[in-house]
Image 1 (cartoon, one colour):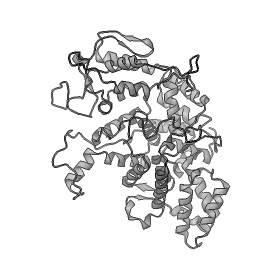
Image 2: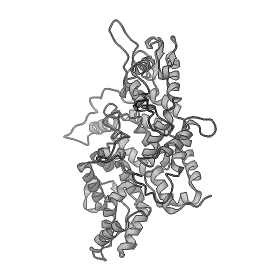
Image 3: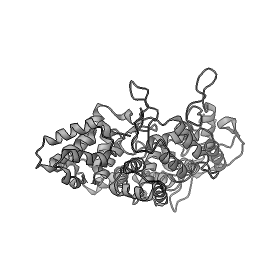
Length: 518
């Protein structure tokens, strides 16, 4: 087994978890990358449990009363008809779940296969969808496509549920919403790609499109005839009431059985069942050559760097297409290829445009995990919102930020910079300030850092800063930044170890060098 440096072990865990801890770094160094990944692949999912079905209509005794916030009715409304508890559980899992890699990959998938509480506000529904992503994080991408497509949560969010066949009398046509976003955002994108993720061009130098409106229409018709599963003990009918448990069920009499044109000129024959059409349509997507580079690049962006080289994308897409044993879409092989690639590994990366801005959720959890913190999730969910990443509440199906967002006045892609502005930048700083000076602020009950381990180093500013540099930044803090932070620490009396530690943590955690992960 090759020796793993402490610095690269920490970098690896920044990519594979919600923040490196001392014990996890030691584990990676002890067993190596492959063994650690295999341990994570074999771990069970720490999911969203304890949420059960609630009626679509809010009962009269389960409504929020702003004048009496702690009444049973208010708590009932908050816990069942908002995603408050799901958001809390997300942060608790991010901080404490042993299946860190699964949690991290599922979070990445949630930003590709987006659903949002702008439409889905039942807690049990959002829990079911996130559990589905956790289940599929280490499975096969084809199974993930099927589960997303038949999810009643996605069905409601993008209007596939109760999508009926054409009705010439009423002039009604199938809804195209899910068909359009499945192609554009969830699988192949709008332009044909080379294996390395670069666009294919025609003779005039224009990108070649992957599909047209006729293909969208074909998929919209293909996806007709599905409704919510019936509740236990009830008869199934078209259309069943909202039910986010289980998967959607088909009604052949409401499925369009005409022939349908789908990707690359393929024609689905007339007379097929809803299940046959759906399977054939998803197969056409799954085997499209765009899927490997399109999905691989986005996962690299979410886990490692916003600007992977075309060669990096090609290497991972090659594994997506064939895991070495003839299997396509093997998510475990893809994740391993991403994290063990030469562009991901190494103590320090200095290439222009390498790395990514820590998105708010990961920015907060990384600080807490690396500095022995804990949280019940309440404060973190509210702070994520102030930084424009309200968890599972994306403003649209396009996520909080697009994967191709370019940093203004540059040609550097930086998706997370899409939500960095004057307000959110200040809110990041304010979050760290309150976290570090928590004893003076009663508004963040339930969230704490564990800074006592730094007290023995407080008397020597240089030693203290270097300890934090190794813990938070795997030794990448510049000499100039180190000197500035040490100077600020030395302005505090040597006997005031508490505030010397606080100053060092505050300045390093709010520095641009920490916020941009390399």
